[in-house]
Length: 487
Image (tube, rainbow, N blue to C red):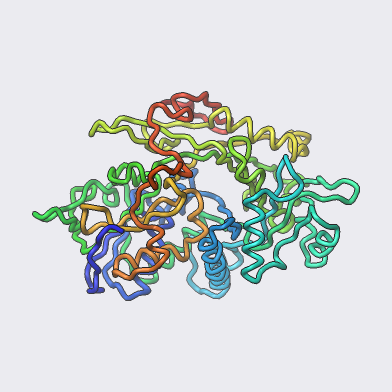
């Protein structure tokens, strides 16, 4: 665990770089613990764009929805943390109905969290794979067995799900034959509207008295400020201003490795694939795929490049989102120091890119053709695609720690595609680190290296030799965009 001197004076200035899930949660929990001088910087004017990708927001946090699931195999620490996070998500829903001053763009009828459940199924088996078996067993051990419906195993399980009010999620893809069902239903979780969740969190941050600098120049990090000993004592922003801080938290998602090169080998920026399907107004499929009639689904989980696909019910615009993480892509670039590092490239960066790699489009389209044929029969196809940039650690655990040799800085990153569900809680660990409070969880998130002789879960830093580097794959243009790929 990297050394960071505990910050005891709660009136000391704290700077947070990044207003995504790690940054927002850090600000909330710092304020709740009594810190009085907190400033969040981000180059995105989120108070105006409300975390909408189509308005120029390209961080992973800026999305329409994210999965809430407690299924974590043998990683019971994340499972149990999900139970706790869901309680907070539910309290945020309740607060929306009671508050007189609401976040911009939201009403008292809005929901942030939707408990529509998670339907798991796959091509190869009607039963459970090893990861799913561990997940069900550990959720059951936690006393929540009744939420797990093993539909494939017994008609009584199907009847139990129907009796409990979940008929809509028993056979969402019409796969049952002769009374035999596929997959299993996990009624813990569902999804959150990601843009609404971040907008609400930003609203909480403001209410708690945190200062916000959300601006293309004034909020854009340029460099650290250091004292003569090399200790970081604040940041310089792109407008030339200096901002002093007793502690600086860097929480910049996919852009973190570009700002913290020391993290090479521990974390790398990788892209998942997103496809959007616009269901026209008036189509009966609007009702069929609504959150009240359709669950979140996860297909061929942990099955490599031909699996790890997931999807959601329709959002408020009538859009179904499909995500694919079976292949993770990189954008290796040689930076000024001579190192090769993956750097996010999106519709909104310069240079920019639109569309998806051919492999991603093939997997998504095959899934749609096989399991949702009514879309093609109705003349409905993929309407928009994009890459979503995450920061993967080599072991899929987060990184919340000081940086070796850089006193005064704490990094909060390595979400590895599964941190969003913990937005209400992530900041607890960051504040513990700021204050020097140790815990088993923080030890899990410490600065680390892959164990010698072991193959890491994610093999990072392949550079230009990565077979899934964007310069080595064929891109399929985004049909919903007027832009062309430019690498």
